[in-house]
View (cartoon, rainbow, N blue to C red):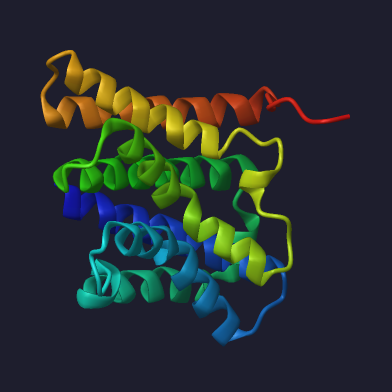
Length: 199
C-alpha cells in the first residue's frame, strides 16, 4: 500500500509541477525537469536524510517513469490543463501533499525514527519537491510564506502518529492522517487562512 500511495503522489505532483512549468512558459525539457523534481524531490531528500541511498526514486524505474508520464501528459494536453479551474488544481495538489506526507511518515516509522523525526520527514516528503520547483523558477518557496501548506503536511503526519499511539490500525491511521492534511489544505485555501506574518 505504501508503494501505491507513493506512486499516486508521484503522478499527482508531476502533473502539478509540469502545469506550473507550462504556466511559466518553459520548453519541453523544462516541463519534464520540473515535473520530475516536483514529483520525487521530497522523497529523495527524505531518503538521503534517512541514509537510504541511492534514494528509492532513483533505484526503482517506476518513479521516474510515472513522473515523466505525468509531466508528458501535462505537456501534450496543456491546452486542456490550462482550462482546469484553479480550485481543481489546488485540490489535486492537496491530494499529492497528503499522500506524500503519509508515505514519508510511514517510511520514517519503518526505519524506527522517533515520532518527532517522523513528523518532520513526513512534512519534508510533502513539500520538498515543491520547494525545489519554486527555487528553479526563482520564486520564494511556498512553504516559507504564510500559506497553510507545510503546516497541513505536518498536521497530517502528527495525526497519523497520534492515531497509532491510540491503537488504531496502520491503514486507518494513514487514512485519517491523510484526510486531516487534505482537508486542512483545502479548507485553508478556500477560506484564505494564513499563518501569522511579521508586519
